[in-house]
Every structure is written in C-alpha cells, then in structure tokens.
Image (cartoon, rainbow, N blue to C red; front, side, top):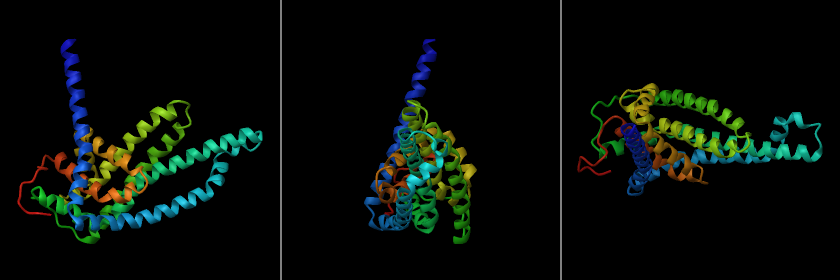
Length: 270
C-alpha cells in the first residue's frame, strides 16, 4: 500500500512538473520573439488581420445578442415578463460565453491558415536556433496551404464538437460555474497545443494523426503549454499580441515531443 502511494505521488509530481514545463514553453517562445524584431513583425501581421475579422464578428454578436437569446429561449415566450427576462439574460450570457470559447479555439486555426508562410518562417527560425531539422520534407506553398486548410477545418470542427456540450453543461447549477470552466480550459488547451504544433510536424512530413499520437505520449507537457496559451488568449488582445510567441512555443513543444534538443546547439543566431 505504501509503495503504491509513493508511486502515485511520484507520478502525480512528475506530471505536474511536466505541466509547468509545458506552460514555460510559452514564456520561452515569448523571449525568443521579443529578442528578434523580425520574428515579432512576421507573427503580428496575420494575427492583426484575424483580430480585425474577429472584432467585427464580436461587434455583430453584441448587436444581435438579444435576438439570439430570444431565439434559443423560445419556450419562455409565454412566461411572465420577469421570468422570461431572467431566462433570456442567462441565455444571452451563455451564448456570449459559447461564442467566446469558440472564438478562442478557432482564432488560432484561422490565423495559422492566414499566416501560414509567416509562421512557417518563424518556426523554421526557432528550429535553426536549436539544431535544425535533419529529416525536413520540402513542400510547395500550395501543398502547405492545402494541408493547413484541411487540418484547420478538422480542428475547428473538433472545437465546435466539444464547445456545444460545454455550452449546454454551463446551465447546470454549480457544476456549470466550477467544473465546466476547468474542463473547457483543458479541452481548449489540448486543441491549441495540437494546432500550434502543425507547422513543425508538417516540416517532417507528419500529419495531424502523428501530432496527436506524439502529444498524447507527452500529455501533461502539451496540456501545460496549451492551457497557458488558452488563458493568455482570453485576455483582450492577448491572442493577437502573443500569437508569434505561441508559434515559437509550439515549435519548442514539437521538438520536446519528438525527443529533439530545445537548448542552443549551434552558434547561429536568429
């Protein structure tokens, strides 16, 4: 019994350390970006474009939130005015929360698609700093964009698939305000980790299923990174400003998941 408890504590402690290490990869990515103005500029442009598009969508959502709340609470049309207003207020908050969650989850996929050539360059600069890629597979811009589109659509679909049940679970008293946000953060973090490791894996000729398999083996590490990104993306303008750092951190995560060095092994600079 004592041995089992010791093993459990050791495994838990190891997983926690890996989680913290994963979260630290975002900070390392930010450090790399801040030390290199070119990398920062490359990463901000597509994120700014996506930011404008999502800001327009947010404005539209706010403008029509009352209509959406009424549409999803059609069953309350015959209720008393007070009861109907309370239900629609809760529905409006839930719809807004769902759209916010989906926005965080899909922003990365859309931005990676828009900025594929830019993020390919950033990721390549990070790879070069830590030893390069021995088995690099050359793909044309068209092939890269096609693969990014397919993977992005799959991940957006996955975001919607998980987002809707979490939205519905949010209506459960107590659980919806405590457990559901934690689950949402974990699910969102995992999806972001998968999204942000796409370029490095494609560079090695590996697809979405390969990414998932490699990250599953390093689940605490991947979750630590993804949850850190997810939390930062919830901050206003966080997704726009931290996207270059997230791409750099995702490259570091990929190298760790593939057993490659993430410390400087060459004297070449970024």
